[in-house]
Structures are given as C-alpha cells and as structure tokens.
Image (cartoon, rainbow, N blue to C red; front, side, top):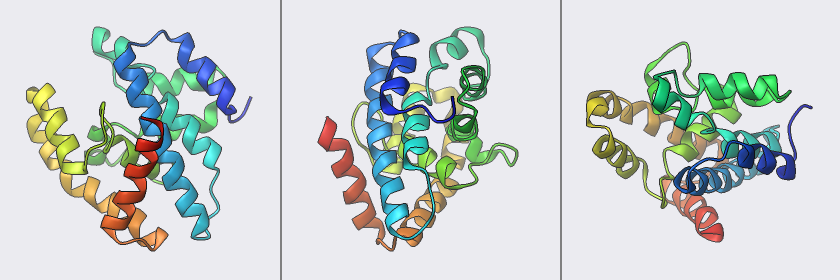
Length: 185
C-alpha cells in the first residue's frame, strides 16, 4: 500500500474505534506535524509530507490496547501499520513516545520521526508548549514523572533542531505550529 492518502489514513484511524480524546489529540498532532513538515520542505529538505501527516494521525492507534495489556506504546501500532502494508509509517510511529527521547534504540532519527515526536510534545486536547505538555503528562502519570522530566532536554533539542532547519526562531516556529493546530480546532 505504501503511504496511505488522507482518506485511507482516516479510515484506518476510524477502524480502531478510539475514544474521542485520542481522536482529538491525533487530529491535532497531524495538523501540527503536517505544518512542520511543510516548513522543512520549504527550507529545501526532501521530505514526504503525506507520510509525516499519516504517521502523526495514526501514532496512537495502539494506546487503548497497550494501556490494558502493558505492552510497549508505539511498537504495537508500528507492527499493526506494517501488517496493513503501511511500513513507511512504522519508524515515526514507533519512535514518537516521550520515553523514546531517553532510549538510544528508539530515539527519533530522521525528519518524519523528529516531526511526529515534536508535534506530539505540543498537543494534548489543546496546544501546549513543550514544558506544559510534559507537565500535563506528569500530572496524569505521576509514576513516570522522573522519566518525563528527564525527557525535557532532548525534547527541547529536537525542537531547536527543527527551528534551525526551518530558519525560524523558536517563538516563530511555535507560532506557526500553534496556528496549524488552531486552524482545525
């Protein structure tokens, strides 16, 4: 199948019958990631915007299952997407969880992975800056507070890398990403 178009990605997302909160989050991450990908392409970097957007849209399809079964978030979704013939989405989906920022084997490498990770660090049910998003996650999951706090530095480093390649200062990049989120909210 390769990279699913927007219609197919939406159909895949719907097929998992996810809770409304995950759908809102997934659509927001997709909007933010697509804008970041467009900015990277405008800076002259070869990148498949559709791949980034589809990976961002589908990054949390495994969340209800991994919560219930204690499996590793991102890995299960990557496997499912590969089984559906969407193997190009597997790496950015597998490397998006915040815990991957502390794991050399799963650290986001390559623009699709970096962008999905950065977008996920900004979108909860609303758009947040990176620190507020990590704080929000630590509030919901205090058992992971230490790991989440340790992930701040690499999360900010990825965002700085994105700002550098796009030529946008941090606040300007933040404004563009927030505007992309707001466009669909």
